[in-house]
Image (cartoon, rainbow, N blue to C red; front, side, top):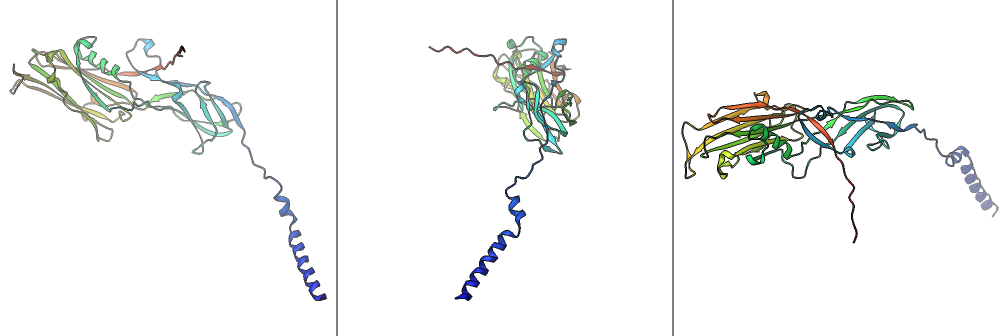
Length: 320
């Protein structure tokens, strides 16, 4: 009996020793670890400017892009990693919660692309819809028909951020262009019919769109119609180009094609012709006027983009 009591006491002693041999471990579990907190600038002023935004006021011809400031984003990163919690407020023109230390900034504006967007678009236009009866008016008509698809981005600026940091203005530059074409034919009679097609290639020389010969023959009299094309897309960038084929064909009074030496055809290849090559930041255009003696006159009509601020007016709803 005495032996059993000693054994039991021995086990209890071991348990007490095990729980009290490392008092520091118990102490650490009850104390919170200290976390280093990087100081931040609560509001860092940031001015965003669209390049060449005053061209229209200077009287220059422009291609208008409607801008919604809420689509402007400032990308903030440290060491190539996006900074969490920092965000640009376009209404107040400030960046909130910017951490101290070396920070990279750049601004961007994502292009607004409609759900039914077509890379290339063509249209037969009755001359009564034009401001003037010439190819330049056709070109203007095509530019106004669709909103240009344009992506903007600024250069990156780096700052060792602290409470006295001042950012340079973010100047948003267009990262692609646009190409429109207007074709006008002063036909000698209504028996002559105009036809045209456009093929679009990206900067790698890969075909990305085509608008086949437009059905001008369905319109009569055909000397009252013109043809327009438009290429606006994120792929309309430097290195991309278009290929245009134009025909003036003769038909008899029964509407049958008359094949002969009088048929006329013109081909413009952007692979070798700089006039048909896209350029970032430019809305390029070709106005092609074909005279009665079938002489084409090609005029370059290049301009820059003009930025128009989107204004959303408050609607007043009357409740009955």
